[in-house]
Each structure stands twice: as structure tokens, then as C-alpha cells.
Length: 254
Image (tube, rainbow, N blue to C red; front, side):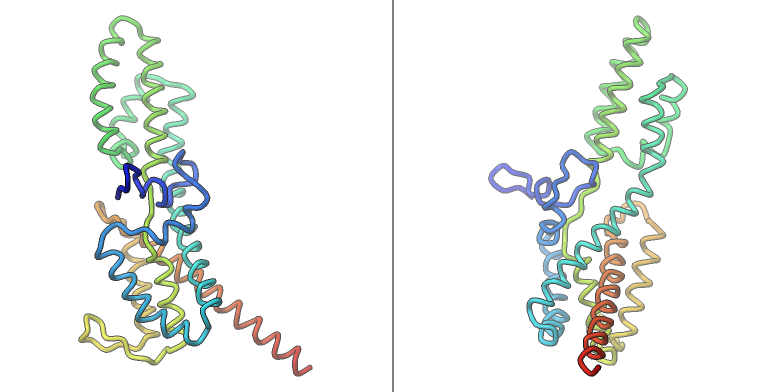
């Protein structure tokens, strides 16, 4: 997404915290960026469906606080999983940078770390690197290895820059949880046809997201653990508020 020559996703989408594109404001701005018309349409439809009912009970201030906090929780959950998934590849790259060798280079090129995390631009750059490396390797082994180290450093930066999250889906899942806890027996029609109580709908949707996140199907660009993060953060917030309300009531009557 571009505006006046500025790539908005680079500026407002949430990047990995070690990326050189990461900015602190992205923890909030990413919630208001979306990847497509259908992405924003379904999120805003969900906000209308569930958010309006919750705001009428909580009021706008409490609603907005909850919405932002669940969005933040979704972001943290997503990148905690990304960090866990990325660490073996990063450790491999750091090991090569510290002590390069032909054997390690061949292992890197053939590894899942290279195939799973390479962007299209990086794969194109690899082709030009290979030509230069092979030419140097026949005349200056030390220079060839230094070239490979520089390439691996670029690849590491590319790995850090690759993940970017946009969308309010994590906060929307937080609203869905709040709706299910506030109106547990209200009927939600799945695909406008299948009736299901809200409390069961939340549980079912949460299980689907958990299964999808663990399955990690290649080509699936949905941040399933961000959705789960929104649900879990919402549950923590609501339980905290309930506990505080009970404490205030006890203090009042005591």
C-alpha cells in the first residue's frame, strides 16, 4: 500500500522488534492498517456486530481501552511466536558470521532457514552473489568468504525485515470474547444459517485458530497466534476488571 511515494505498510505496519523498519508507534498504527478491502470490511463488520453491543454496556472510554490493549496483546503474542520460530535460523546465521566456512555455507543454502525465510528480492540477490562468489573462489578464497559473510548479514537483515503485521483482527477477537462473556447465550448465525450460542462460537473459533496456528500451513499468511493473543489478553483484562469491581463492592459495604 503506497501513498505519495511512501510505502504505508513499511511505516505503519508492525515490524519485528529487531528490524531496522521497526518503530514504537507501529504497535498502535498496525491496527488501523489493512491488507485489502475485504480485510478491513470483515474486521469493521465484526466491530459493528460485536463492538456496538459491548460499548453500550461499558461506555466508549472503557471500550477503547479494551480494544487497544487487546490489539497490543495480539501483537506481542504474534511476535513471541515469530521469535521462537526464527531463533534456530538466526542462531545458524550468527554461527556462520562468526566462523564462516564452505561447509557451513553449503549447509545454509540447503537449509530450511534459507528456503523458509528468503524474500523474492533476496533469492534474486542470491543469484548475483553466487556468480560473484564462484568467480572469487578461484582466485581469492579469503575475499570470497568475506563476500559470503556480507551476503549472510544482508540475509539476516532481510529475515528481520520480512515479518510485518497489519489489521485489527487481534482486537476484533478480543471483542468477540467480550461479547461471548457478556451475552453468552445470544445466538450467532454462522454463514447466516447455522445457529450457535455466542459462548460456544468463541470456544470453537479459538480452537480453530489454535489448530491453524500449530498446523502452520505453507502459504497461510494469517496471524493466527495474534488472534489467540487478542482472545487471551481480553480474558485477562475482563477477569482483572471483574476482580477489581468485586473488591470495590466489598470495600463499599465494609
